[in-house]
Image (cartoon, rainbow, N blue to C red; front, side, top):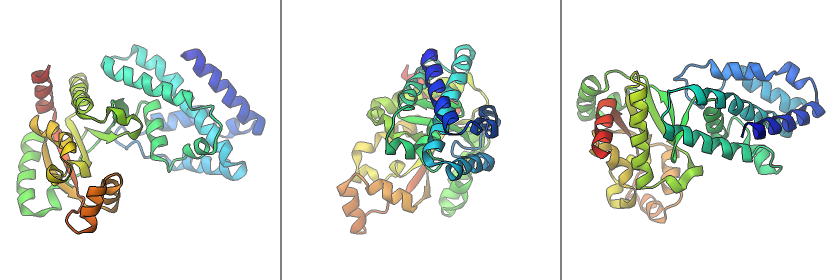
Length: 305
């Protein structure tokens, strides 16, 4: 694998130097690497320093989108190369997480040399999938089945924004169970591994996250927010019920979060029934947040094993 990385990096660097041998002088790979690696652990995988954004925009302006794409591909490979040695010696991750890292690295490497318009446009900071790749390859986030997980704090919006009843119960939960707002593991869906997006994969994901919590005692628990944690789905889309019920039955609490345009678009995108009910005014897709405190999640995982 390391020889494959080295070969691909050489090919990509030769391409860039052929275009302009000053690109790596003006924008050295070590600088890009250090800027990403020194970001706050809880800054979010989507956060990119403004100077890196400006550098990529300059490459696009001075040369082309294709050149910027090749540079970004090179940096993904560079991050993977550095990650391999770290993962082989670090004890922070259970074996399952290491396996998912390697699975994703292989996927990224297979796509670095592809020449088509879709791949050229893929390597942009406005593409969420590319940001996930960058987060995984730089070890800022980690993959587990169909999820990617970052470190983040839980916003207090779930306490303050939805009436006195939720405020009362969420305040008690915050004080008695959460033990603070940060850091938590924040779960996101990665649609590229949708074949793992099922009840068995969801169950296993949280068992692996329990192992991560044991290895990282400073992490206070796990949370996620999405339209598919909405209690309305018990009647509308019962096949998705496991997404909320697995955490809930293990001690997680679910609170109302928001009803945004993105939630609506995502909820009705692949379901004629949800779209029809939305169009008829019978269903308003609403995002809910689940919060699973570390002790409850670890206890659940012990009971399942």
